[in-house]
Image 1: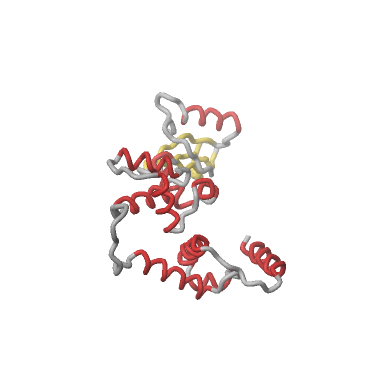
Image 2 (image 1 turned 60 degrees about the horizontal axis):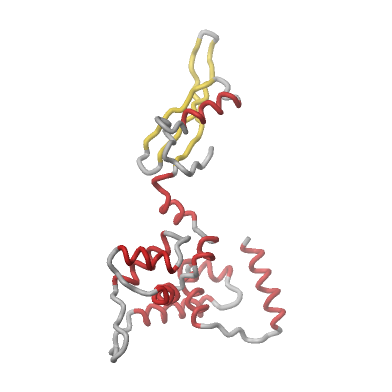
Length: 221
């Protein structure tokens, strides 16, 4: 995937015929946030539009601007409390499907009154893209953090045991609730054929006492 993107960037640069690419402040912020997360070494391997030093310099300026308290704010609209940007950024990062209106509504429920435009500007300043694009690029770690309480893992392991017919291999199917690490042995069989697995699935998802009754995401074996 990285090799393809690099090649695509080279083709696009050839189409520009040496013309200098001019970035908007919003584009610089987005590249700075993503580039800082990768680090200098990886950037040197994949960056092709802007040099790694330029991207990291943009990030330093972004941080410096965020903590710049040298200028005094004059008369006009009151400054947004520091708590609101922190909450808005956290909500956007942990809930990729939440748009400006949803974040505004949740902040309102917490006692913070702000506008949709303010939320948009806060996320833009932190290099966070709008909800549709965020939803398409959900990192696996973010997905796990957002749905940790509704995820279970399932797999098989085998046990060799002596029986009346000699040494027999048994297949043990188990599930684990990730949030609590609680393990449930779903079934043991010499041959876990299709009909047996279907019944195990019914037992696990039973609405009354199934182990996976409240689970929505099941990473398979």
